Length: 98
Image 1 (tube, helix red, strand yellow):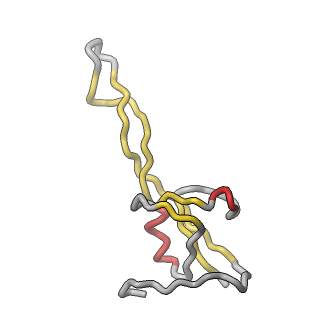
Image 2 (spheres, rainbow, N blue to C red):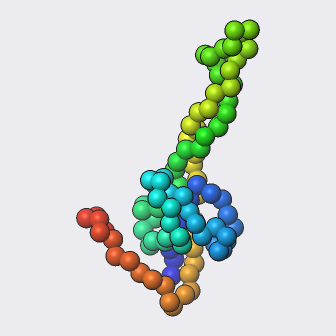
Image 3 (cartoon, rainbow, N blue to C red):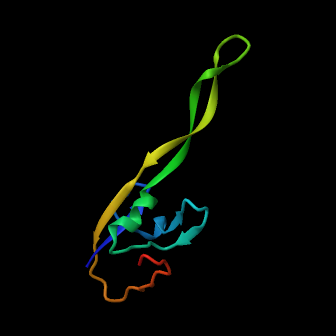
């Protein structure tokens, strides 16, 4: 079976250490979520990260630029997974377009 997983993080394999995931809607989840619909994982591969950068518009009294915190857009990864596991838990979607 071919399934897909979207994530901001890059990894080479799914393991128990990375099982707790931070989702973009501030809900943490335990486990990995997969789908056979690649379009469904795309929103999980796009997000933001907080970075510190030198400001181009804000300066200290001595005219040195301030370091400001900003949200930077991040493109993550869509993983195509080949799964051969007979005991997977399958959930039905509640969305209208499923």
